[in-house]
Amino acid sequence: MTVIDISPSVMQFLLAFIVVAPLLGAVAALLPAPPGLRGKNPDQAVLRHGVTVTGAVLIAAIVLATGFDHDQPATMQATTDISWIPALGVRIHLGIDGISLPLLLLTALLTFLCALYSYFKLPAGPSPKAFIALVLVLESGTLATFAVLDLLLFFLAFEMVLIPMYFLIARWGGDQRRAAAWKFILYTLLGSVVMLLGLLLIGLKSGTFDMVALATDNGRGLTTSVQVIAVLAIGVGLAVKTPMWPLHSWLPDAHTAAPTVGSVLLAGVLLKMGTYGFVRILLPIAPDGMRTFAPYLAAFAVVGIVYGSLACLALARNGAKGDLKRLIAYSSVGHMGFVLLGIATMTPTGVNGALFANIAHGLITGLLFFLVGAIKDRYGTADLDTLAGATGAALYGRAPRLGALLAFAAVASLGLPGLAGFWGEMLTLFGAYSPAEGLSRPAFRTFMAIGAFGTLLTAAYMLIVVRRVCMGEHTPHSQLPPDDRTPRPADAPVRPTAAGSPPQLADIQTYEAAAWTPLAALTVLAGLWPAILLGLTDPAVQKLLAGGKS
Image (tube, rainbow, N blue to C red; front, top):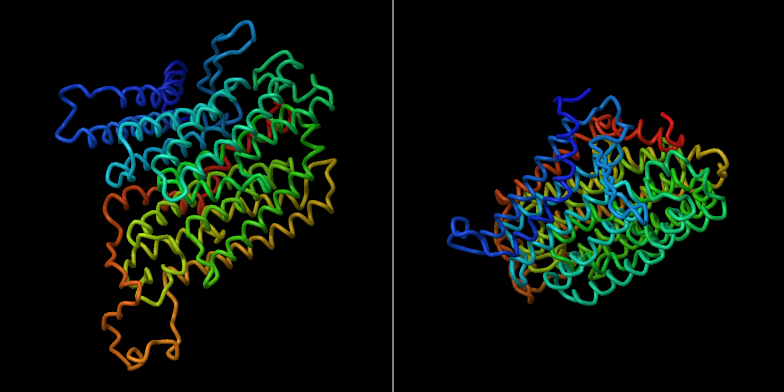
């Protein structure tokens, strides 16, 4: 069933357009604007160009989704297969199925919303031309990662996003941006070198780099030892990008230093590239190797869940001087731990849960970083103690709509039933309860119990954040200065502290509502109607785990 009937050639064109258009748009952004498009303000003209290109890509992605045959989500659709480097057998092979389509739509949506947000709130830094060009190159590389079906092309697309993100952090970031950018690039590049060796090993030993052919073969052309080495090498590179504990330490620094849109794209789409690689490459191509490492992957995953939550609790406590952006970054370590746990179960339930959690994390954490960026813009800081101080700074009183949306995103992140965050975590825990044949059931049930405990920790730190930031903190009467101990009317202005009174806050602006509403609406839609995602992913996952057989 398709929403609209689109011919295969048009579907091919749409997918190719989605991948290539941002790259062409990046080149156009750096060129002088034609006389009729320069406008009175060249900076606004290039920002408008960014909104136009990302908007066109989003529209093309939506049309592609409406032409997608939802009765056959396990079949690769809109495929293009052209010989590129015959000597190496490398082909320009593109295609989408029920696994990659949601990620493609998420990437197009988040990039468009970031471009729209930047049109009104450009981060301080060098030329807007360079900023828009980097965002578009980043979009092209991410979309290509989810669309290509050749191992070497996957690697090229996977690496294509590193340089744009490096410069977005280093040139438009905040404090410690250069150190954070270097840490990001070094970690990811070192992981990628090891991953390339694993990809070459698979391609040379099997005689092809075609991901569809390799998935159909299901590891039968590779010995167990080759699969184990390949999973170890490729898994390290993917785990760095995911990020998996203990290879996560670049992430909090990168998020803390990155501009708002950089954090949204990093959390919303770049982290998904690593987990997508586990599902698309390692599970179907090297199943024996994955079965060997699955218990270790699950163990690292649940340690990451608990570690990320404990780090967030430490940052959220009173007096810790915790940065709210850093706290959300550590929460990503925990949430991506659930994704890895679902993948490690090697079951349809667990992998479907992982893919659902991927999309939910992109929507919810993208919204959280937008909100935290807006709070930092208004207060000039993301320090939790400052935001929660007894200076009338509580969001519910100063900007009630902003506070309500932050509370909504927080409860969605902690997995409240009825919102998108619930289903992914629940399905991964169900998958861990009954892992694939050959995996230790007692071990995975232990991992399930630890993961379930992690959900309680997640609820604890998110509710603390909501209480402190949205409600503020009550200062005991005995600790007030002597002239502040007399009762005052409830509507009297708060006396400024030594640090000065907080600025009057603007509530949600029109452009902010335009950028944030789609994420909030989709969080509710996916929570109330999970079949909209699971109906796409489940047949594709079943086929993937069955060795290409539906």
